Amino acid sequence: MKRKSDKLDVGEDAWREAVAREAIIRPLAGAGRLSPTEVKTACRALGLRRARLYALIERYRSEPVTSSMLAAKPGPARGARRLADDVEALIEEAIRDYYLKRQKPSVSALHDHIRQLCRTRSVAAPSRKAIQTRVASIDRRVLVGAREGAKAARDGFKPVVAEYRADHALHIVQIDHTPVDVFVVDAVHRRPIQRPWLTLAIDVASRMVAGFYLSLEAPSAASVALAIHHAVTRKAQWLAARSVKGDWPVSGLPDVIHLDNAREFRSRALKRGAAEYGVSLVHRPVATPHYGGHIERLIGTMMGTVHLLPGTTFSHVSERGAYEPEKHAAMTLDELETWLALQIVGRYHAEVHGSLLLPPGAAWGDAVAARREPLRFPHDEAQFLYDFLPFEERRIRRDGVRLFGLRYWDDVLSPWAGRLDRRLRVKYDPRDLSSVFIEGPDGEHWPVRFADLRRPRITLGEHRMALSALRERGVRLVDEQLIFDTVEAQRELVETAATATKSARRRAARSLSALSATAVGPSDRQGDGAAEEDMPADLPLLEIEEWS
Image 1 (spheres, one colour):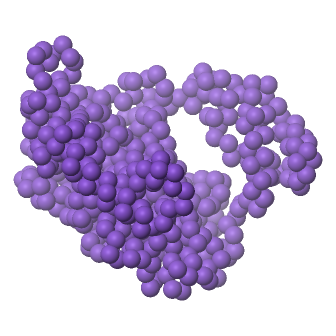
Image 2 (tube, one colour; image 1 turned 60 degrees about the horizontal axis):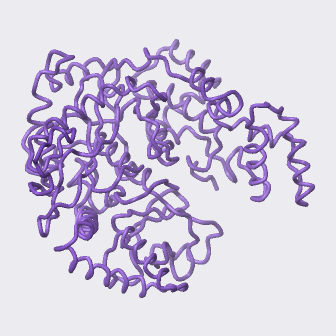
Image 3 (cartoon, one colour; image 1 turned 60 degrees about the vertical axis):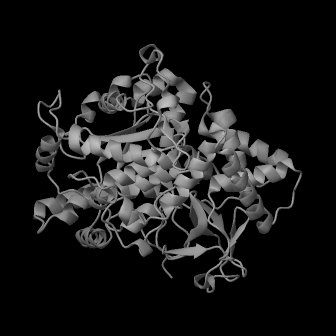
């Protein structure tokens, strides 16, 4: 039986080949009748026969994602590593502690070193070819940095400035975070809680705001994913849900996303998710702030506008004088989000931009017309969301599946329960653990709820706090009922304390914001996508530092 190619399991060589194929096949699949010259050029570039080229074009037309360019073969994927886990760990250790050094040992020397370690630990030594394969998969910049120094890595891999010139709409989108210069209040007691974080995305060619994400949580890979999702999807329903009148036409998959070097911009799920849709991630070179000039100027512009709001902290303490931001804070997080949408749609997009000498809204039309190809959109919006959700791998047992100590069950699991000899990916939304999404062997996703439907919705943050409280009490074996009892007790304590302490109000606001956000279907919040019952409750908001 042929298995659907899995972009997360294939080897790096196969994935790079698929990415290269996608870049060539995409324009051919979008064209009409192909000329003999185009066919001949593509065949020569890909090293394929004409029949094989046409087969790939038809496959991409039916499934326009990079993973469709992977070879679907029976059995394990080509290049799959079959060494024992302890041998793989030993090789990684040897590469890290012996090979990635300024002395620049050879692959042969590395192989001899690994053989010696294997003899010492009484395990079978891998072949030289296996070592070469793993050395070849090392990121070139990491390799040069470790063996030749950080300066050599910067000089050798520093992008050319000319590459960052945006020629058309969604050629380059820049993304960055900033704490907002204003305090918000909680929605229940309307007392100050904290400054929220804003993740902004800008289309460089037109200077249009491509999308944004506002949160009480510190920046994470989830913040980036939600900002990307907002930038890519159509925004008519998102604006209508907030009673914002106006047009926000920016939507579609960008060619390049330009990011800085923060940890949240380097998760594996973000890298593979972007590559799946033919989007390149480019990280800003270290110590070159001018590379992010467009997004930095946009952030400065937006922060200048919020200085007019009650509760503003201004940019510097010296500007604040005797003004007390927390005392004057008046807007909730949702109200601030709506205000920002009004500011972007009604003011920023309509006013003349200093560099463009025309409004970004007008520049967008020109930038779209300059594209050689039409705007691209995810062929399956539900799958687009699933591709960025965090996940854990679990076996489906006869009593269902367990995640974070919680049990989930649905009749859809029956064919796999106790019968499947491999783990499946269990994807989850940290804002609401009442449902998870099981990725079946065929790549289809299935929502699965708590086995006990009487359980209330809880966030991952609440779950972690409950486990921490139980550990402090010396409780080692925790059952599911005890977790929910602890969450309920903590909620009552927070509610009681919320009128007195800012930290309690902040905790209550975060949980309320997360759970209320997942109560609204993503089609109502983010765009004109698929029906609500076919889509997960958007993307994670809570403290996910690194995705699986």
